[in-house]
Image 1: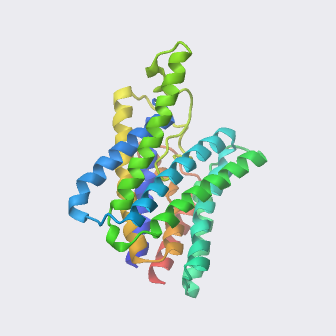
Image 2: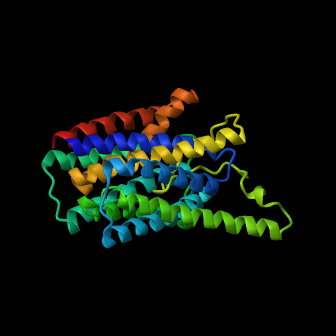
Image 3: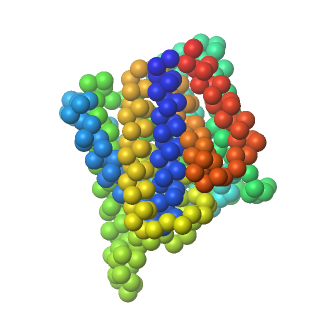
Amino acid sequence: MLSAALALVGALVYGSADFLGGLAAKRLRSIVVTAVAAVAGLGMLLLAFPFIGGEWRPADIAWGALSGATGAVAIVLLYACLAIGPMSILSPLTAVVSAIAPILWGLIVDGESLSPIAGAGLGVALVAVVLVGFVPGDGVVRPSVRGLAMAIGAGLAIGAFLIIIDQTSDESGLVPLLLNRAVNGAITFGAVGVLARAAVRAGRTAASVLEASGDAPGATQTGHADLEHASARIALSRTRAWWLAAGCGVLDAAANVLLLLALRAGDLSIVSALTAMYPAGTILLAAVVLRERIAAVQWLGLVLALTAGVMLAVA
């Protein structure tokens, strides 16, 4: 029960982080938002480390670094598939794949067993992920093979993050997450540096790469993104955008801590299914802050998400 509760709360926190990241990306370039969020999240984890601690074992350090690289791959694929669209199909597809991959790993590789109610709860959770992540209004548009492949790849990369973090030892504490942020921050800041150098060579200022050039969504280090509300219109200063990006990183790091605790207390299959419901937090915040309307199909998904959470908690 504790593991399911932590995973469900973590999913809502992930969604809240993605909401802030999506808003920040209305003014700042997506990769810049991601880089700032990585540093802010690393700072939050460094502050928490003296209280939670962790042993610096070589294996756990390696797993943490690998998870950071995996997150960077997820971000690249996620941006690419969103640029291709349609978002209403590729968004829930990414979320479902991100849940199915760790579920299969937990059941087949780790040998986890599920009670009948837990199995039914996983089924309800996957349906909820599809409905919550569905974005009405795009019309019937057939996705391209390339878009589908990238969405599946992004989902697999997100799922890989969960699997990798689950491999770390209980004694490692926050060490794997510290390495995750450090590696991800190095990769994303390196990408920003490459873009800045290319801009200078093209006769523009290096600062020109900081500004958003379109409606690209923000993303977090685990590959999550504000898929549903990236198109929200809001007046935003650059200073406020920097703060929102930092807030995104802090919340995402907090969600990672909750995820870590959930994995240490329970099964990967259940935790991954509940974590995939992260769009629920984004949708609810968008409804409260931006007064966006929640579609009937998404309301149904939210109800099923809560139902799945209860089923998995009592299993």
